Image (tube, rainbow, N blue to C red; front, top):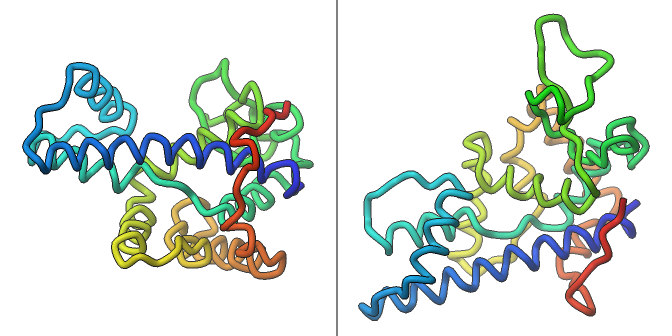
Length: 215
């Protein structure tokens, strides 16, 4: 399971890092008082919309600073542990029928699978994806944008500021809102990271910079 999913996580992280490097370049340019090109302004507006940054304070510098908190990777240790837990190690109906390895909800009736044990009065479904790679992309975007995971993003930003490696075990502590199980869910994810020694994979990189999408 880990061998199948790890390359996809690494590819999405590489895509995210590419955007992050461009943001840093624009921030450096802005710090020198150099105006952004029309292409860069359009790209920045697109990123603001994609990452749900609706604030207008601080000008370009403020916008870049806010985006740099959001546009960042998820440690493979954390992403792998959540994938294993949410998909039943790839054996869940949602993973098999909808490539949904993170159990993300949707309220679009045409874009989801209905949970068999859904509570009365609930209308959500589990979102379907064209491929597992798309599921990973949506998962990373969800952690990087949803208000429930602001604490994770802030903790990650602190680790970046002090020059510490991103720690999946630490960031897992900010995911009590991912499941109705709350802190019990956090304990489960941390136990998966520890039992499977997943932290050693946080430094993994793709050899060719690309992973084959799995369906």
